[in-house]
Image (tube, rainbow, N blue to C red):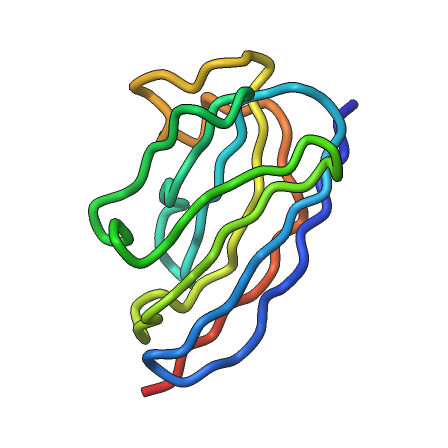
Length: 123
């Protein structure tokens, strides 16, 4: 069983920034998802096991950045220029594969999930 532990969420004003972290163990494709109340869980970004290939949802391109530090066993999501519509619970997830592929944004493609960290952006 792979354990994923997120941290770094919080409340900020529009235009602000946050950095989410997810501690993991293993060599997997990993991703960040978010889910707002009453809405489906959506893919935000993912990164291959080697860190050389990244994917982003159109809604966050140019504002969010996904990176990973294997030495520290930590996945990051830098959230810049935050908007109220970015408000959601953010989840870290991992796939039992080194590559993410074209289905990176589909939650059912992922095998392991963290407990989530809340991001709230006020206008």
